[in-house]
Length: 165
Image (cartoon, rainbow, N blue to C red; front, side, top):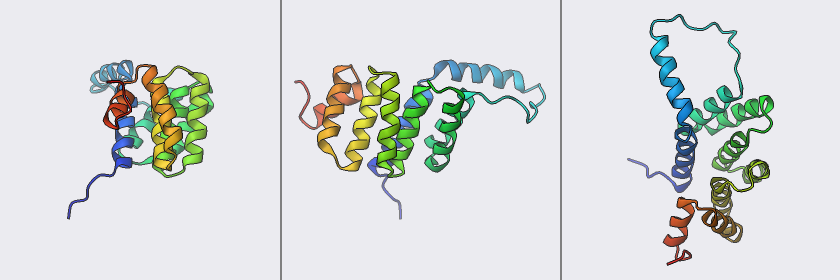
């Protein structure tokens, strides 16, 4: 019997994909490294792992639904780069996927303190509020994200009849 994906699962995969595919320089760099590494030796285990390494690892595992691991990787990126707003946001999204809504909102709030005009962060926080059952706070965030030009927020507001016609 096939199971139907839930809104929570689809949302998590969508946000994770946005985070991963929204990093074109990382992907291009990875393609170059992959091409070179076909003939090179594997790096030793002592290779330094920077904030981007841990962020990308967290984003990858969350894309495949392993949010338990993701919430362990994102803090490693944050320790190495405390201003890494995407790591706070991504950790928040993963906490939201795990149903740990207070932790999710707290992490997304930190990301928003660092990037107050990031429409994706408002949209993501709105989605967490919606999952948590707080439609009023979700709507405030969706409208703020839409005002900042977030396409997903605009489409969602249109869909529920709250958008500009």
